[in-house]
Image (cartoon, rainbow, N blue to C red; front, side):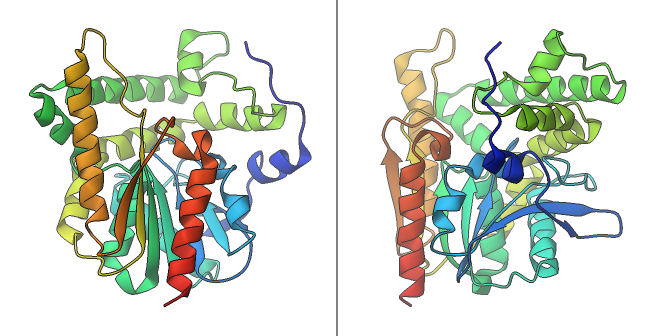
Length: 321
């Protein structure tokens, strides 16, 4: 077992406890981490299992120059569970309700990683007057599993997703039964490795969150919707973003070879991913796609300086209008 990081007051203050719990319904609150001052406000949306912690190396650097907000989606992190299904629309409407409740008005620069990129594009498509810039961090795309499988002429991605959903359902049942016990393979699968970057308090918070039935209920629903209902929502709302500043960051090492897969097949999947990112960049006449060298899917962890630089570029362009 990897040792945990030593106690760190700054990390514990921001990531081991709720920050601003904003009421968005009679019995529901969304956790926001708000830092910095100035317009436009930069909104950070995490990927499928992500929380505010995903942006620890980015948000506070950007907050020196503008107000920033990261958030935990319903059922994840410190946010209360929300109604099922957890589609992109549900995520966007929760976020907008929280921003209104916290008196955080537009304009916004939207930053989305992975599934968060899909959700933030829906935000921009439906509310274009509120958004003045975007940064997509190895973003998911509409129907991406199907499209990648078509590029390879197989069903590997869809098969993998079905297996993952079955795993989520099984772990959810164990969580409801209180059967996710430390020292078991199921606990390790649910909670993940004890990362050295997590302080004892942060680790305790992660264990509590990932052994909660609400976490797995939300995760399974959002994952199931990503290539179906959420993709349908984004496709239906799709529109030109005009000349909005838009930077799309593509990880150079986000596609790993599968067992028995040829190099050509792996490259076909990567080509499909890059092509989808080109389509995102083409939504704006000022859209640009950049490949980030030596970065895996979570570019904000591997190359935070690249993400920070892209956000600062978009902020400067938005303010110059």
